[in-house]
Length: 314
Image (cartoon, rainbow, N blue to C red; front, top):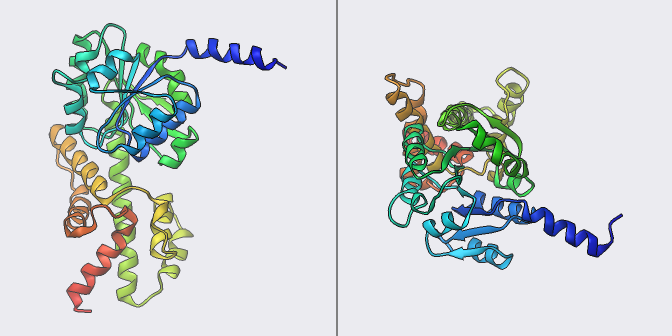
């Protein structure tokens, strides 16, 4: 067993081999990821985005705060983003104070958010022109998984760049995929979220329909769960619809509507029309606009229940 002093010297040498990490977007997921990286002794560089709490916590643990995304990128070997929309990503990437302005040869930028593939490919070209490499790496699972390094990471882009950053991704994720050319990760994530949100809305409507038909939600769930339609998403919705717990699916309705809208846009870009996403997009949009934007997707049960009550007058 190493003596304490020897162990400390070993840890210092080990840390010197680790890349410095820039992280932009310390929301629920981003803050959890930063905490995980700090647990793994990475050197972190951050910039404030919307709130101070997560930034102050990261700085309190040794992260360096900078005044712009450009400064973060200049100080980091790998710059990571966990932003809400493609518009937010583009705003942080471009301009005099953007990430691209701080890049130099050999640096890597990762987008962990759920973005439009066309935007991702456009940004990839601009990063390459600055000497860097852009990877899309959208995430599966929740902030609770991020705390323990158990995310699903759907990375794509240049394979050599992926291989270089894969050890860092392995510290963040339990399942790390390389899915091909730049934009493939975002494409697959949008397909995945389209299926997830459509399932959640269908199950939510089913529970609300059970109320109107006069049968208990629990009985509906018991029958569905015993058959081939059973799924993890069904269980998430049931946790709220039957058990009153909205925390099992920590994904806001406004974000679900955004992702399904992106899926429909991706279909348009491919020259086709998505038929199935229309109802999901409409339902999530109506719920968002009626005041449920920040509710969790499982609370679409309430949206459908209220909608049916308005229709029947009770």
